[in-house]
Length: 309
Image (cartoon, rainbow, N blue to C red; front, side):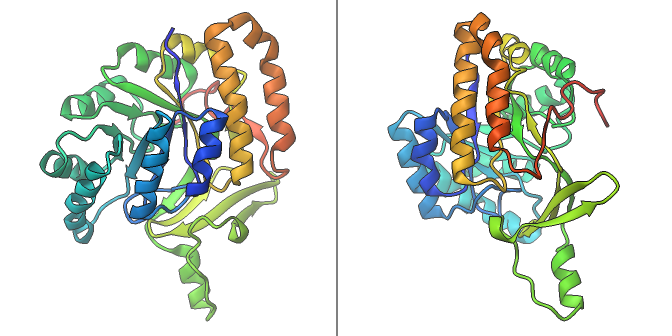
């Protein structure tokens, strides 16, 4: 039986070794100017360092280039791809076809993962991008389990699914919060995913807090809950899903390590000893609930709902 890759989005270079020790197989990192909603900012020197650390342990590094690019950024794609190829990055995550076109010219051997966040909702589209050169499709977060399994059954590419963490509900290319404070005559630093500066929208009726932050890609409003399906992995393992992603955005390093350890054990048991996994899966969920921030309840996202689009 295929064992899914356990993919993490670390917040800093110092996360890498602890996450490897906890059981991570691969990492998504990058720079804000190229990558969308990154858990942390990684300079070129830091990308090189992460690749070295990961490859020493037989792990992989993917660099996010899935932002929306305007003309002034397009000219920078080739040079950045050349750099990533020179340091032996394992794959580039892209959404904009401009990245694919630049990769063909500047890094023709680079593996590509297609991720537009929202439009990977059927296997025809996944295979379309596969035939254009992508080796993996990152599925939309608003799909239910039946849709995910059906896509995998018909996919010609690897399939990646987020199994833990928050999801984005809204994005604007404008710095809405920063512009509002500037209008009031106040200063507001670009958020850059700093945990201590996190802002929220508060829904009094539902008692929900929606994390909101700004980076170079604009304003992002995130879900009030965290996905957690550590107790519902079996169907996707049986379907052969290639990669399970834990999103580390707005999470502490300590939290990520603990969650990674739980998912590593759960995935291994699910593959090797299904009966023991079934016996222990409720306890995994309970243990994660104990370390979960009070304002971040867990749920199963859209995995058991009607697909919403």
